[in-house]
Length: 328
Ligand code: UDP
Image (cartoon, rainbow, N blue to C red; front, side, top):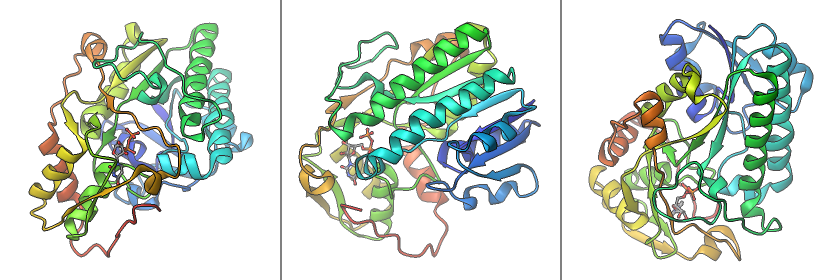
């Protein structure tokens, strides 16, 4: 197939490109390199077409979508720090950008996926969130919730356009997907802890570290993205993707320190120092992945230790210091 990957120079996008190329597909990437990097694609030099541009640029989007069979829409403003520090740009990218991409896909008859997030469940911290779980909305005036608000609307856009056009489309709800190439610069905890541990620098646990997450490997998630779009019973649905092994953030720090053979100490950083005043962290976020299992036989193969090890091993030796402050 001919596929466009928006955000293909980003973390999940670049792994998706690897997978698509390895499976013989013709890949175009549209990326503005705002958070992604060409370094994520260097292994695909000559194997893909790269277009440098923004999803806010309608002409560029049009040019990239024309002639494609499939659009994987992964371009977005991501990371808590990005959302909190640049609320307006983030909203524009995540709302208008998605509208541009989805409308172009429909115009050109391309099937499409839209990347969404566990954040759409909002403050719902029940264990085993199913796709039909209620959203518990945070205040629209707290920029921390703007990502959830925008992604919720993206889902609706994709859903309504998919229904109306009859084109196959899938909404992907990613739960803390991690792996090599993810940067810690915009907040994500695992690459931050790994970088800190490898430098024997303090591991910055925000709050008291009792908050829990389930981390999913990008290597498990990427094949599922493609499989879902190839599965008619998955069309016009939102599907959770991630892992189900729950760990506290303090527990994560300990695992990373041990697996990296590190002398780092754990340093507890108050939320206000990390994110500014009034930040509402989620105490727990755990998916129910039985829908993905039912639809495509999704069964994560990477447990937490293997995920952490894959990230440690992918860090090239002699990487210059990337010491990340608690408040970038
Ligand atoms: N976190 C942390 N130290 C860091 C970065 C993040 O303790 O250096 C915490 C963060 O407060 C949250 C968890 O790790 O409780 C996961 O954060 P991330 O931004 O990776 O994902 P999300 O909050 O979207 O689940």
